[in-house]
Length: 332
Image 1 (cartoon, rainbow, N blue to C red):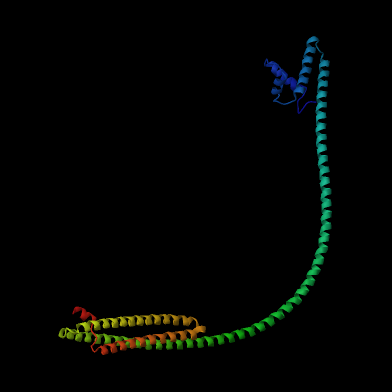
Image 2: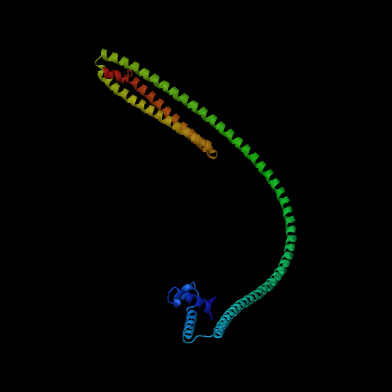
Protein backbone atom coordinates (compact mmCIF):
# COMPACT_ATOMS: atom_id res chain seq x y z
CA UNK A 1 0.00 0.00 0.00
CA UNK A 2 1.39 3.37 -1.07
CA UNK A 3 1.86 6.23 1.31
CA UNK A 4 0.42 9.73 1.05
CA UNK A 5 -0.22 10.18 -2.71
CA UNK A 6 2.65 7.92 -3.98
CA UNK A 7 1.32 5.67 -6.73
CA UNK A 8 2.64 3.87 -9.78
CA UNK A 9 1.72 6.68 -12.18
CA UNK A 10 3.64 9.22 -10.16
CA UNK A 11 6.64 6.91 -9.98
CA UNK A 12 6.39 6.27 -13.73
CA UNK A 13 6.31 9.99 -14.43
CA UNK A 14 9.41 10.59 -12.29
CA UNK A 15 11.19 7.64 -13.97
CA UNK A 16 10.36 8.96 -17.43
CA UNK A 17 11.68 12.43 -16.51
CA UNK A 18 14.96 10.94 -15.31
CA UNK A 19 15.35 8.85 -18.44
CA UNK A 20 14.62 11.89 -20.59
CA UNK A 21 17.49 13.75 -18.81
CA UNK A 22 19.76 10.74 -19.42
CA UNK A 23 19.94 9.83 -15.69
CA UNK A 24 19.61 6.38 -14.18
CA UNK A 25 16.21 5.96 -12.49
CA UNK A 26 17.44 4.60 -9.15
CA UNK A 27 15.30 4.48 -6.04
CA UNK A 28 17.01 7.50 -4.44
CA UNK A 29 16.90 9.51 -7.69
CA UNK A 30 13.18 8.81 -8.10
CA UNK A 31 12.52 9.70 -4.46
CA UNK A 32 14.41 12.97 -4.87
CA UNK A 33 12.43 13.67 -8.06
CA UNK A 34 9.25 13.10 -6.03
CA UNK A 35 10.37 15.69 -3.48
CA UNK A 36 11.79 13.22 -0.92
CA UNK A 37 8.38 11.65 -0.37
CA UNK A 38 7.22 8.06 -0.52
CA UNK A 39 8.55 4.81 0.82
CA UNK A 40 11.62 3.29 -0.81
CA UNK A 41 9.97 -0.13 -0.72
CA UNK A 42 6.93 1.13 -2.63
CA UNK A 43 9.13 3.02 -5.10
CA UNK A 44 11.24 -0.13 -5.62
CA UNK A 45 8.10 -2.22 -6.23
CA UNK A 46 6.72 0.27 -8.76
CA UNK A 47 10.07 0.57 -10.52
CA UNK A 48 10.32 -3.21 -10.77
CA UNK A 49 6.81 -3.42 -12.24
CA UNK A 50 7.64 -0.67 -14.74
CA UNK A 51 10.87 -2.41 -15.78
CA UNK A 52 9.03 -5.72 -16.22
CA UNK A 53 6.41 -3.93 -18.29
CA UNK A 54 9.15 -2.39 -20.44
CA UNK A 55 10.73 -5.83 -20.89
CA UNK A 56 7.35 -7.23 -21.84
CA UNK A 57 6.78 -4.54 -24.39
CA UNK A 58 10.21 -5.25 -25.80
CA UNK A 59 9.47 -8.99 -26.45
CA UNK A 60 5.97 -8.68 -27.87
CA UNK A 61 4.04 -5.60 -28.62
CA UNK A 62 0.91 -5.38 -26.52
CA UNK A 63 -2.42 -4.67 -28.13
CA UNK A 64 -4.45 -1.63 -27.29
CA UNK A 65 -6.97 -3.65 -25.40
CA UNK A 66 -4.18 -5.23 -23.30
CA UNK A 67 -2.71 -1.83 -22.58
CA UNK A 68 -6.13 -0.53 -21.57
CA UNK A 69 -6.69 -3.58 -19.44
CA UNK A 70 -3.32 -3.14 -17.78
CA UNK A 71 -4.01 0.57 -17.24
CA UNK A 72 -7.45 -0.17 -15.81
CA UNK A 73 -5.98 -2.87 -13.56
CA UNK A 74 -3.25 -0.51 -12.47
CA UNK A 75 -5.75 2.28 -11.76
CA UNK A 76 -8.03 -0.19 -9.94
CA UNK A 77 -5.11 -1.30 -7.79
CA UNK A 78 -4.20 2.30 -7.04
CA UNK A 79 -7.83 3.12 -6.22
CA UNK A 80 -7.98 0.11 -3.91
CA UNK A 81 -4.77 1.23 -2.21
CA UNK A 82 -6.10 4.75 -1.79
CA UNK A 83 -9.44 3.41 -0.53
CA UNK A 84 -7.69 1.13 1.93
CA UNK A 85 -5.53 4.03 3.13
CA UNK A 86 -8.58 6.28 3.50
CA UNK A 87 -10.51 3.57 5.33
CA UNK A 88 -7.53 2.87 7.61
CA UNK A 89 -7.18 6.58 8.29
CA UNK A 90 -10.89 6.91 9.03
CA UNK A 91 -10.77 3.83 11.23
CA UNK A 92 -7.83 5.28 13.12
CA UNK A 93 -9.63 8.61 13.54
CA UNK A 94 -12.79 6.78 14.61
CA UNK A 95 -10.80 4.74 17.12
CA UNK A 96 -9.21 7.92 18.46
CA UNK A 97 -12.62 9.59 18.73
CA UNK A 98 -14.00 6.48 20.43
CA UNK A 99 -11.11 6.49 22.90
CA UNK A 100 -11.70 10.20 23.47
CA UNK A 101 -15.39 9.59 24.09
CA UNK A 102 -14.59 6.73 26.44
CA UNK A 103 -12.07 8.89 28.31
CA UNK A 104 -14.58 11.73 28.53
CA UNK A 105 -17.29 9.34 29.73
CA UNK A 106 -14.86 8.00 32.34
CA UNK A 107 -13.96 11.53 33.41
CA UNK A 108 -17.65 12.44 33.59
CA UNK A 109 -18.31 9.35 35.72
CA UNK A 110 -15.43 10.33 38.02
CA UNK A 111 -16.74 13.90 38.11
CA UNK A 112 -20.22 12.59 38.89
CA UNK A 113 -18.83 10.50 41.73
CA UNK A 114 -16.92 13.52 43.00
CA UNK A 115 -20.06 15.67 42.81
CA UNK A 116 -22.04 13.01 44.65
CA UNK A 117 -19.34 12.85 47.35
CA UNK A 118 -19.23 16.65 47.46
CA UNK A 119 -23.02 16.76 47.77
CA UNK A 120 -22.86 14.30 50.64
CA UNK A 121 -20.09 16.38 52.26
CA UNK A 122 -22.06 19.61 51.76
CA UNK A 123 -25.11 17.95 53.31
CA UNK A 124 -23.02 16.94 56.31
CA UNK A 125 -21.52 20.42 56.47
CA UNK A 126 -25.01 21.91 56.35
CA UNK A 127 -26.06 19.73 59.25
CA UNK A 128 -22.91 20.72 61.16
CA UNK A 129 -23.55 24.39 60.30
CA UNK A 130 -27.12 24.12 61.56
CA UNK A 131 -25.88 22.56 64.77
CA UNK A 132 -23.23 25.28 65.04
CA UNK A 133 -25.90 27.92 64.44
CA UNK A 134 -27.96 26.49 67.26
CA UNK A 135 -24.88 26.48 69.49
CA UNK A 136 -24.08 30.06 68.43
CA UNK A 137 -27.60 31.12 69.36
CA UNK A 138 -27.21 29.49 72.74
CA UNK A 139 -23.82 31.10 73.19
CA UNK A 140 -25.25 34.44 72.13
CA UNK A 141 -27.94 34.17 74.80
CA UNK A 142 -25.27 33.29 77.36
CA UNK A 143 -23.15 36.20 76.10
CA UNK A 144 -26.06 38.61 76.49
CA UNK A 145 -26.54 37.42 80.06
CA UNK A 146 -22.80 37.74 80.68
CA UNK A 147 -22.79 41.23 79.08
CA UNK A 148 -25.57 42.34 81.41
CA UNK A 149 -23.61 40.96 84.36
CA UNK A 150 -20.44 42.71 83.18
CA UNK A 151 -22.29 46.00 82.75
CA UNK A 152 -23.54 45.76 86.31
CA UNK A 153 -20.02 44.88 87.45
CA UNK A 154 -18.70 47.87 85.49
CA UNK A 155 -21.15 50.19 87.23
CA UNK A 156 -20.10 48.74 90.60
CA UNK A 157 -16.46 49.16 89.63
CA UNK A 158 -17.07 52.78 88.59
CA UNK A 159 -18.63 53.45 92.01
CA UNK A 160 -15.67 51.87 93.76
CA UNK A 161 -13.33 53.82 91.52
CA UNK A 162 -14.97 57.09 92.52
CA UNK A 163 -14.57 56.13 96.18
CA UNK A 164 -10.95 55.27 95.54
CA UNK A 165 -10.35 58.61 93.80
CA UNK A 166 -11.81 60.37 96.82
CA UNK A 167 -9.43 58.47 99.07
CA UNK A 168 -6.52 59.31 96.78
CA UNK A 169 -7.42 63.03 96.86
CA UNK A 170 -7.58 62.87 100.65
CA UNK A 171 -4.18 61.19 100.80
CA UNK A 172 -2.75 63.76 98.41
CA UNK A 173 -4.01 66.59 100.62
CA UNK A 174 -2.46 64.93 103.67
CA UNK A 175 0.77 64.44 101.75
CA UNK A 176 0.76 68.12 100.74
CA UNK A 177 0.24 69.18 104.37
CA UNK A 178 3.10 66.94 105.45
CA UNK A 179 5.29 68.37 102.68
CA UNK A 180 4.48 71.94 103.76
CA UNK A 181 5.29 71.05 107.36
CA UNK A 182 8.57 69.49 106.28
CA UNK A 183 9.45 72.56 104.21
CA UNK A 184 8.68 74.80 107.18
CA UNK A 185 10.91 72.63 109.37
CA UNK A 186 13.69 72.79 106.79
CA UNK A 187 13.43 76.58 106.60
CA UNK A 188 13.52 76.88 110.39
CA UNK A 189 16.54 74.58 110.55
CA UNK A 190 18.23 76.61 107.81
CA UNK A 191 17.59 79.89 109.69
CA UNK A 192 18.94 78.38 112.89
CA UNK A 193 22.09 77.14 111.14
CA UNK A 194 22.61 80.57 109.54
CA UNK A 195 22.31 82.26 112.95
CA UNK A 196 24.80 79.82 114.45
CA UNK A 197 27.16 80.39 111.54
CA UNK A 198 26.94 84.16 111.95
CA UNK A 199 27.69 83.83 115.69
CA UNK A 200 30.65 81.58 114.94
CA UNK A 201 31.97 84.02 112.32
CA UNK A 202 31.61 86.86 114.85
CA UNK A 203 33.59 84.85 117.40
CA UNK A 204 36.28 84.08 114.84
CA UNK A 205 36.52 87.76 113.87
CA UNK A 206 36.80 88.72 117.54
CA UNK A 207 39.57 86.19 118.03
CA UNK A 208 41.38 87.54 114.97
CA UNK A 209 41.15 91.08 116.41
CA UNK A 210 42.60 89.86 119.68
CA UNK A 211 45.40 88.13 117.82
CA UNK A 212 46.22 91.29 115.89
CA UNK A 213 46.19 93.28 119.14
CA UNK A 214 48.51 90.75 120.71
CA UNK A 215 50.85 90.95 117.73
CA UNK A 216 50.92 94.75 118.01
CA UNK A 217 51.67 94.45 121.73
CA UNK A 218 54.46 92.06 120.95
CA UNK A 219 55.90 94.53 118.45
CA UNK A 220 55.85 97.30 121.05
CA UNK A 221 57.47 95.10 123.64
CA UNK A 222 60.04 94.06 121.09
CA UNK A 223 60.98 97.69 120.50
CA UNK A 224 61.32 98.29 124.24
CA UNK A 225 63.50 95.22 124.55
CA UNK A 226 65.74 96.54 121.78
CA UNK A 227 66.24 99.79 123.71
CA UNK A 228 66.98 97.90 126.88
CA UNK A 229 69.55 95.78 125.06
CA UNK A 230 71.28 98.96 123.87
CA UNK A 231 71.29 100.37 127.42
CA UNK A 232 72.37 97.27 129.27
CA UNK A 233 74.54 94.54 127.79
CA UNK A 234 73.99 92.52 130.91
CA UNK A 235 70.49 91.89 129.95
CA UNK A 236 71.59 90.35 126.64
CA UNK A 237 71.57 86.84 128.00
CA UNK A 238 68.16 87.30 129.58
CA UNK A 239 66.89 88.89 126.38
CA UNK A 240 68.08 85.89 124.40
CA UNK A 241 66.33 83.59 126.80
CA UNK A 242 63.26 85.77 126.57
CA UNK A 243 63.58 85.62 122.78
CA UNK A 244 63.41 81.86 122.96
CA UNK A 245 60.33 82.19 125.10
CA UNK A 246 58.80 84.54 122.57
CA UNK A 247 59.61 82.07 119.78
CA UNK A 248 57.93 79.37 121.78
CA UNK A 249 54.98 81.71 122.22
CA UNK A 250 54.87 82.35 118.51
CA UNK A 251 54.90 78.63 117.87
CA UNK A 252 51.98 78.39 120.22
CA UNK A 253 50.30 81.19 118.31
CA UNK A 254 50.92 79.32 115.05
CA UNK A 255 49.43 76.25 116.62
CA UNK A 256 46.47 78.36 117.64
CA UNK A 257 46.13 79.62 114.08
CA UNK A 258 46.31 76.06 112.76
CA UNK A 259 43.66 75.09 115.29
CA UNK A 260 41.59 78.00 114.03
CA UNK A 261 42.07 76.77 110.43
CA UNK A 262 41.07 73.30 111.58
CA UNK A 263 38.02 74.87 113.15
CA UNK A 264 37.17 76.59 109.88
CA UNK A 265 37.58 73.34 107.94
CA UNK A 266 35.42 71.62 110.52
CA UNK A 267 32.87 74.37 110.00
CA UNK A 268 32.99 73.82 106.22
CA UNK A 269 32.51 70.12 106.83
CA UNK A 270 29.57 70.98 109.07
CA UNK A 271 28.13 73.12 106.24
CA UNK A 272 28.37 70.12 103.86
CA UNK A 273 26.69 68.03 106.51
CA UNK A 274 23.95 70.66 106.69
CA UNK A 275 23.44 70.35 102.90
CA UNK A 276 23.11 66.61 103.29
CA UNK A 277 20.61 67.21 106.07
CA UNK A 278 18.28 68.94 103.58
CA UNK A 279 18.04 65.68 101.62
CA UNK A 280 17.73 63.47 104.70
CA UNK A 281 14.88 64.83 106.72
CA UNK A 282 14.36 61.58 108.61
CA UNK A 283 17.86 61.88 110.20
CA UNK A 284 17.86 65.68 110.63
CA UNK A 285 17.89 65.66 114.42
CA UNK A 286 20.94 63.41 114.63
CA UNK A 287 22.85 65.58 112.12
CA UNK A 288 21.99 68.76 114.07
CA UNK A 289 23.22 67.12 117.28
CA UNK A 290 26.52 66.26 115.60
CA UNK A 291 26.85 69.83 114.34
CA UNK A 292 26.31 71.21 117.83
CA UNK A 293 28.96 68.89 119.21
CA UNK A 294 31.38 70.03 116.47
CA UNK A 295 30.62 73.67 117.33
CA UNK A 296 31.18 72.99 121.03
CA UNK A 297 34.53 71.37 120.19
CA UNK A 298 35.51 74.44 118.17
CA UNK A 299 34.48 76.68 121.04
CA UNK A 300 36.59 74.59 123.35
CA UNK A 301 39.54 74.92 120.95
CA UNK A 302 39.11 78.69 120.84
CA UNK A 303 38.88 78.81 124.63
CA UNK A 304 42.05 76.72 124.91
CA UNK A 305 43.80 79.08 122.54
CA UNK A 306 42.73 82.09 124.62
CA UNK A 307 43.95 80.34 127.75
CA UNK A 308 47.30 79.70 126.09
CA UNK A 309 47.60 83.35 125.14
CA UNK A 310 46.83 84.43 128.69
CA UNK A 311 49.35 81.89 129.96
CA UNK A 312 51.99 83.25 127.60
CA UNK A 313 51.34 86.81 128.78
CA UNK A 314 51.58 85.69 132.39
CA UNK A 315 54.89 84.03 131.68
CA UNK A 316 56.19 87.28 130.19
CA UNK A 317 55.06 89.20 133.22
CA UNK A 318 56.69 86.67 135.53
CA UNK A 319 59.95 87.16 133.68
CA UNK A 320 59.73 90.87 134.54
CA UNK A 321 60.37 91.95 130.93
CA UNK A 322 58.07 92.70 128.09
CA UNK A 323 58.11 90.19 125.22
CA UNK A 324 60.64 90.87 122.49
CA UNK A 325 60.01 90.80 118.75
CA UNK A 326 61.81 87.96 117.02
CA UNK A 327 62.57 89.99 113.91
CA UNK A 328 64.05 92.95 115.88
CA UNK A 329 66.16 90.68 118.06
CA UNK A 330 67.67 89.07 115.01
CA UNK A 331 68.53 92.51 113.62
CA UNK A 332 70.24 93.40 116.92
